[in-house]
Amino acid sequence: MTILGKDAPIDGKHMKALKALAVVLSLFLCACTSVQVKPLDSSLAVSKICIEKNEKVIVPEFLEIVRTGIDRHGLASEVFDNKAPSSCGVILTYTALQKWDFVAFLSHAELWLRDQNGKQIGYAEYHLTGGGWF
Image (spheres, one colour):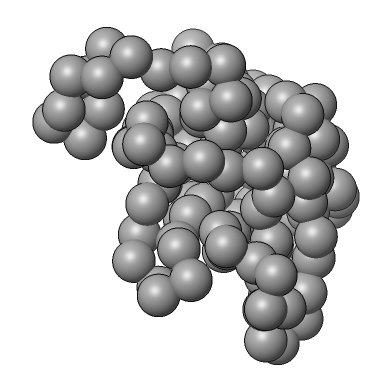
């Protein structure tokens, strides 16, 4: 499999991290969606993801869905408000938007994984195309 332009095998631990990054987005798949994932480099060993809480996101339970997806793949997660704890090697930031069409629904989400130095090491985007008419 090619990861970020490199041919490298993906072991079980790295596959879990890749799946955790994409699991939230896959929960919302339908015929009118666009999902983009830039997975982690296979040389990175990830066992814990620290999540910076985004108070601007009003999508109900979005943060808990993200945490559940991460936990489901055998990775630890921790949420922080302002400054990441020193034990955080990988930091997840996110944004999520919702629209209304008789009910509220997720219309767009982006998740960024960065290392301790702020370098982006993974990315996922979900976008509902066509306005989300049910």
